[in-house]
Picture 1 (tube, one colour):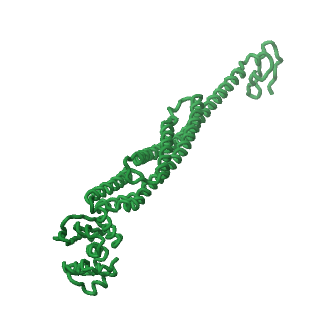
Picture 2 (picture 1 turned 60 degrees about the vertical axis):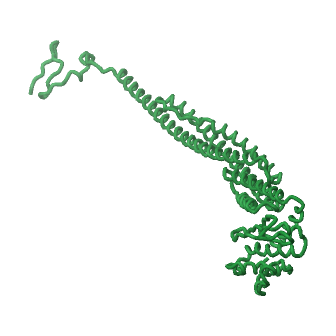
Picture 3 (picture 1 turned 180 degrees about the horizontal axis):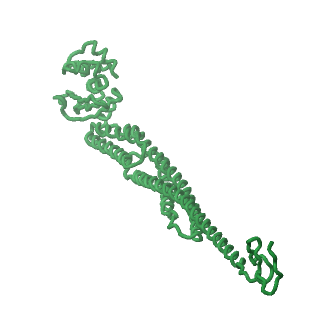
Length: 410
């Protein structure tokens, strides 16, 4: 055993036990109070400051990202709205240009002067009204086309700028969509105006073309070429389906053809004037009645085909097989001088027999002059004109087969 001495003033702070030494930190007294301590409050404040700063930075970052994404969405919507508005504007511009061209053509038709054929007043009034409405539509369309489409602009950098720019884009999108709707509505008005002008113009041309039939009948003495030109022009006018430069030309051609009918008739009247004029016109009317549907033109002279003096009469006919069938009949003045004698009627019937063959070319042999003359004589006989001036005196009596065949040519 080991003896322990009593403590004294110089006793150590710790006593080894079993070979171990205990630290003074575990004993009470001054030794414990002298150890240093860490300042916990300062360290906690720093941590909280760092955490708070990070939270602010994160919030700002989220706000920035959100603002950027929101702007991109607004920009995309704005681009779509602008594209739609620009598309409608392009379409309207094209349609309005077409309408302006249409109005110009219709205006030229309405401005035609010295019209020989006048369409019914209601058709011209309808076209005039349609043109006026179309001009209003084109003006309104031009004004709308000139409206600016809202621009996108540059994308801002910071979120506070992005929010404001997004709001402006949304406003611009609304304006672009509203403009697109207005453009679409105006395009509908332009289309309606275009249809109305077209319908009215086509109706006017068709009416004028249809009036050519009565016009021709009122100028029966016009020359064949002028009448054929009138018929062709009238057919083109009736077939018109659009109003454009071609329609303007078609209408002008119709009026020119009608004017030519009038002028050639006046020339024919001038040539037939004199004491025999009434008899000549009666003979021409008689001939036309014998061959309805065949264009007949007449020329008069003192001597035709070697006859005309001393009571003789002469006639000569030229005909064309093409469509429409037409003929020119030459008659001596003596035919008119002896009118309405049976011999005058019989001779005229013989010449009409030549003319009407344009409708019956397959009914007889036209390869020889003798056959041709016998056909004309047979035709006059089939019509009841038995005076020898029907061709019997000059060419002999035709075979009965010719007379029977000629009876089927009307």
